[in-house]
Amino acid sequence: MRELAVGVRAAVSFVEYDRSPEARYPVAVEQAYATARWITRFGAEEGLDPSRPAVAGGASAEPGDVPP
Image 1: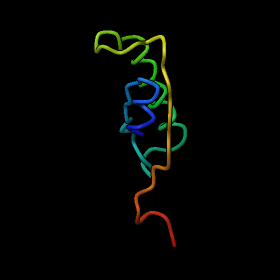
Image 2 (image 1 turned 90 degrees about the horizontal axis):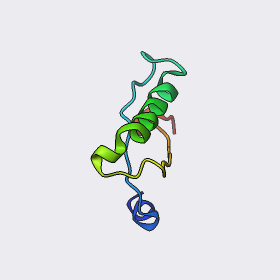
Image 3 (image 1 turned 90 degrees about the vertical axis):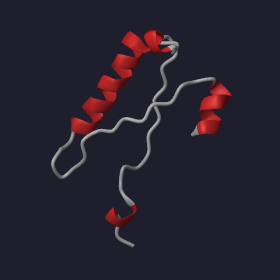
Image 4 (image 1 turned 180 degrees about the vertical axis):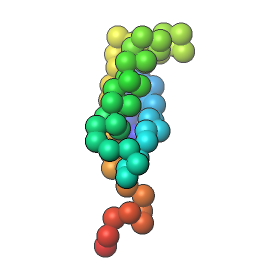
């Protein structure tokens, strides 16, 4: 992720969203979207370019969560 961020000169944020089973769909999606909106609204105050947002994601499972 760092190489990608450096290559496109972007900041990377990782959303610590609520996970299931307590938080059901679409909670994680809504929380990730809220983070993206915050970056576009207030990112300039943190030295970010809010006109160039990017979103990346991956699996949220812990190593022991996925059966072999």
